[in-house]
Figure: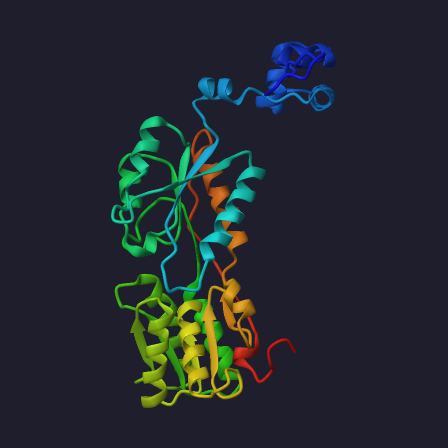
Length: 350
């Protein structure tokens, strides 16, 4: 930084400056920053006022050397898949960053090799750069949970331990089956009886979980699912192709999809055939992406409570990093349904 002529640079306030301003010892200031529960309320208030007046910032690096805590949480980010419409991870990351900050922690994002699900974790563990991890793609059957668990590295998973129900690590997830039951029941209540399902391939645990909600809702009304389901890749093109076949062969009046990406494909097919979503054929997606909110006539979609997920993840992290550590049971949250024009006769923007 260039020095302004005639003006000497001002040194940042120190712990000693705060102690002098508040009329207390340096140890008392240190306790106010690191162990405020040790101080009387009036003393703590006096020190906090001095910190505020002076603009004092605790030396985080020095504190980390003493406590061996970085106050950083590692989160691996993956590139968005081409041909998809959902950006659900953007919402989750934003919520996690905000919630972590309020808890005195920060999120360290890191990228890895798309072909190696463990890339990046080992470097951070060896350098003790983070206190814990948040793992977000357990539904893919990736090995992060087992790898971190074997190394006793603290982590919380956004997603159930699908391949190991007996796992004892903390996790938070959204009930996809309940969401798709809600979506299907919404169409049933409007008089639809032939409701098709477009989901992911059978090796997707989360896809099969969501499909079970569609099946449950139809069978609860005594309706058949035969010939009404399709399993495809999660791309707009796949949703487009699957819906074309189902419209020709099964004649559904409504679609429930495992993602907004697949639902977008259905909307393309309807437009190509001169059909209007909501008036001629109902369509419901999953994730309530930004695309769902702006595409005509507005896509009805299951909305995951990602803000609540972030709160529960941070709670679980605080438990893991406590002394002694505390691991609570997994948390399963219930989604909601955001109704728009694609599942009713109400037009876009009305």
